[in-house]
Image (cartoon, rainbow over all chains, first blue to last red):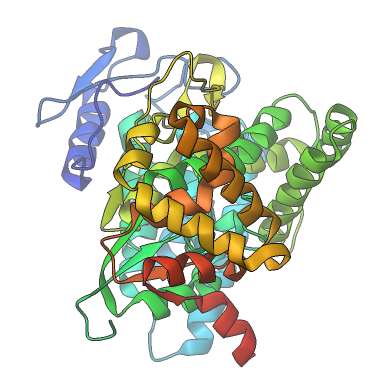
Length: 192
Length: 276
């Protein structure tokens, strides 16, 4: 589902509003509003068919997924938690540690795809934004880590809207990441 | 230039280098850092969409039709076998994506691999225009190319519309003919310079010369995507007339264009290769 109106001015605070409105509702999906209005008056539709399997998303309680893992919004909660812990423990004076942390994070993101295959499209989109960025950068700076954390926080949310994806995409672009980094290994410009 | 107030006009080829991962894009970014005003042309965006975004969209669509990532290459070969150039481009694109993702050792299930690639492709296609717009200070739109402004759009059912409808003189929507008229002296000068080069001119330049000569007689002939596409570099260059400097990675075409239009040409990709 596409937002009714997207501008480059969509920002973090708007996403937080959406998060709060989704999480604080605490009702079942069938009772939830089909649209969210942000504090700036932009209206977004909530996707009621978010799940890639065609099922409505569950959000009132954690699920137990394959191998007994607890899932949030379809994603492996323990892996998300581990990623957040690593992101909080970067020591800039320790270049080896930073490189090791990044390797671990990339490995965690890869593993997250196992649970993401059954998660919502929005969770998958944000995970893709995050992974593309993590594969693009060898030694991240503090700004990069800040957007990584934001993406992980979103992934921990049970229910996401298109606005979350749009905000995260723009935040990563502002941090210097290109969504087209996957073309890095292409040598020609391909125009001719 | 180089004093922090210069202006540079960027061709599609350099924009494509800029969109890569920082380790590769850094060379270009460093060389453009001195310019506080960076422009490109909407026609460069059209070229970018027509080349890379359509290929990525084809891959994305194909990824929705196969059960395993490993089947993608076969799917492409089966469907595009009769179109070797297209097949080669899409396959090359897929290989680049695979190389990008293979940076992380380890394996995941078929289902997870496919979801991963689909999502990466979706992100690339749907985020491309936002990245493009953020990567420059200004976009000139002399040709009024409507196709350039048709953003990739998500449709219901997980499909993405990256189509580029044909344009024809029966249904003119752009302003290319007016653009040609307003800048006629520059187009003619470029045509003459190509003529002087004779057989030393690249195939692209020779095609451009022919189109310029035809447009002098009938400028509405430009209003056809099959025609304007062959004039791409020239259109992009003339669109950036107000800028001090051109940045491009196609020396064969852009050295002439920069020379005729009185601009300095920088090619950071070539310079980096020479240094290495």
